[in-house]
Structures are given as C-alpha cells and as structure tokens.
Length: 394
Image (cartoon, rainbow, N blue to C red; front, side, top):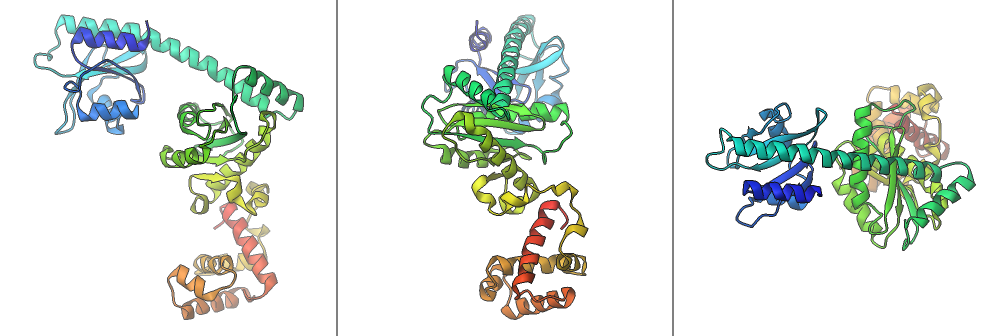
C-alpha cells in the first residue's frame, strides 16, 4: 500500500480530510475530499505542497512532537483548530498527521485514538522506506556528481555514459551546473544540520531549477550542493523562478552550458566562483549570480582572498579607507569610476549636486595625495577597492 492510499483510507475511516506532512510541514500526501470539506488554508497548502511556517510553530507549541497520541492543535483566531499526531519510527519524528476538529472529538474516544495510532504506525514504516530510498538515490547521485567533477577525463566520460544509459538528459540542449550553499564555502565541513538542510533544499531546487523537464542530478559535496542540470528550452525562466523562491540564507552560482555532459565540470567551476561572488558581494550579485555576471571578478575571485589583508592593498586605497569618512568617500569614488568619470551621471546616481561631488573628489585627493582624474590612480583605486570588497576589508 502506498502512502497516498494509507492516508486516503484514514480519511475515509475518520470521515474527514487528512493531511500528512513531513518534519518541516511540507506536504507529503492528503486524503480525498470535497470542496465543502476543505478550508482555504488547507487548499493553499495542498496547492503549494507546503504550509505556512506559522503552522509548524503551532504544532510545536501544542506539543504534538512530544505526545505519543493525538493532540488538539489550537489555531490562530479566525482559523479552524486541528488535531495532530506525530508519526515516529524508532522514536524519531518523521512527520505529522493533521485533520479537522469536529464536535465531540475532545476528549478523543477509543475508536478515534486507535485509528490514528494504527495509521501512524503503518505510515511511519512507509515513510522510513521513503527515507531509505532517498538515501540510496543520494548516494547514487553523490557518486555520479563526484565522477562528473573528477579531474580524470576517463572517469568523467564513464559517469556521463552511465547517466545517459539511465535516461538522463535524453532531450537536453546542453548541461550546466549550479552551486548552492548556506554560507561562504569553507574548507571545514559544515554542521550536520546544515548539510541536511542543504540536501532538502537541493531536492526542492532540482524540481524548479534550470533543468526544467530535462532532468537534474545533484549531491552535497563538503559544504556546497552541486546540481548538474540537463538544460531545457525554458531554463532562463526557470532560473528567474529559482531566484524568487530560494529559502532565506541560500545563495546560488550558475555556470554556463556545455554541449557534452562529460564537460560539465568546467561549468561547476564557474558556478563555484559565481557562488563566491554572491557571498562576498551580495550588494552587487544578490542571491543568484551567473558566470556571465562576474566580469573581471572572474579573475579576482581566483585570488587567495582569505590570505589577503589591508597591507596588500594599493597605498592609495589603504590611505582612503583608513581616513575619517574614507569608506563613504570610497563609495563616491567607485560610483564615479563606474561611470567613466562622468560627473553629471555620478551626481544623479548618488542624488547629490555636482558641486558636492567635486568637493568629495577634492577630499579624496587631499586624503590620498592622488587625483582620481589620472589614469594610474583610477586603476589602483578601482582594482584595489574591488579587492577590498571581495576580501571583506571594507
């Protein structure tokens, strides 16, 4: 019996709609129901496949995760209360069964309690099977992704041939890699909780990413999730959707497409640098950066940025950043240089008068001893300030 069938049977036994959520209150299955039986909140959860974060708070507040039996889950004013029961396997909560409250439910009678407990025990086994199947797929994906990213060409070719034989990317227009993380990628391994969160996010992103209908294979490697996508016709729109739907605290780098799956390792390297750009300068790149976005940062992000300090910056940049008001003046200088020395365009961008801009540029000359109108000074300031940003020295 499938999870869907078992939840549907419980709904018939209880004569009311039943929904099964996982630990994060993401919808797993729901029973059949009529329009009269379902309220707007539940309809929204079913359509979105996820309930609101507030629902998880209410479940925890009611103590469902601690109770061995069904628990009344009071809702916010204006919303219907629920009955919840934790689904456990060997003491570990795998999800929650949630149904409507009806007159006479509380206190729960013996039949109601038995139906929920029996269903929860059977559903726990089915959920555990899903967990084991997912782990098997993750191990397979991890091996496939690692082989696709290997230094050895023969290993990459074999991995691509294996995936093609399994039907991956049959109608693809190319292959690209995405790199996702919840922090700036580091050498030390992430906490287990971060890794589990990345695995969950990776599964969600795979369903809505640039892979579209052509497929994707992903794995968490160290503290970065790598998703190899078989590019579909609508992958540009899919990337836009991805940027809008990312969970808080997650950033993504995107490599360029390669014609052959065996060559996607180059796209993964590009994605990793784009991801680093997201973390080192979120003001410029936001939460999703592509290789094409990086420009000259493609070179700068290859530097050993963690080894660089203020002493490595050009003297003019150090004098500017160390001076009182220097960081604000540095922002003005960057805006001026970014617009090719066009004073009018810079003043408009900064919403200041041109005389104010000239005053600030004169202050920079006084503090640093160089004139931003001179080519060598511009070069040192532009490159030095960019490196200072990427190194976190500003």
